[in-house]
Length: 316
Image (cartoon, rainbow, N blue to C red; front, side):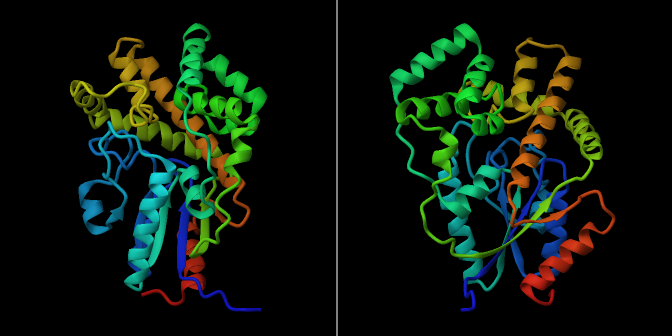
């Protein structure tokens, strides 16, 4: 059997608040790896507190590529990520180092490794009609319609994620096929790196839920609402932008609009984060070639280190 000569890469994946960043930083001190962020919210500048973005001191010591590369007014897609990530990985590999990609955006990991299928271009007439229906019925009703037509896509898309619900229904109308089926297609090309996948999957979600609540409260105490106020004062941002739909930001935006009180804002923010974690865990369980590590087990770091040592060779 021929030896796989592809360069090496590591995917460190996990739900929000599972400790991915801290573990990645520790591993970068022991192995010849350089870090690439795989997070659809960390790409945006000025969104630091609500995204749990590593602070300036951490990023100075442990640089992460693909953080702070977009203005919140600029959408960033899985296709954009794939292009940027491949370029970053090529640069790291050319230096004789190993890319370690760390994050929780499953769509980005999948687009990177499997490629993107060719989906139809947007149809303004269909989009306008779906928007009108959502105004009359609510996006939750359209999410239920999506669940009936494409349960897999509905399971990944939140009931308030207007843009993705609209796009999924639009694709179904244009092609007659579920979006989830078409996203499986990829580009048919072999991924240029040989990958070790590490998935932080909690056996018990209770500690994860505690960390999510604690982190949300810490964000609020660190002036998260002031961060959102600063975004609002720009005047060019609105709730339909991907950046503002990020978990926590949508709930804060609604609170500052007077749509909820402080207690409801907290409850909604924590609930939305828990729902995000649930979707991330569901996706991770589909990654059958990943090595599963429980973030709440005492030997997490030792097992992650052993896996990298076996894959890469002796640590630095």
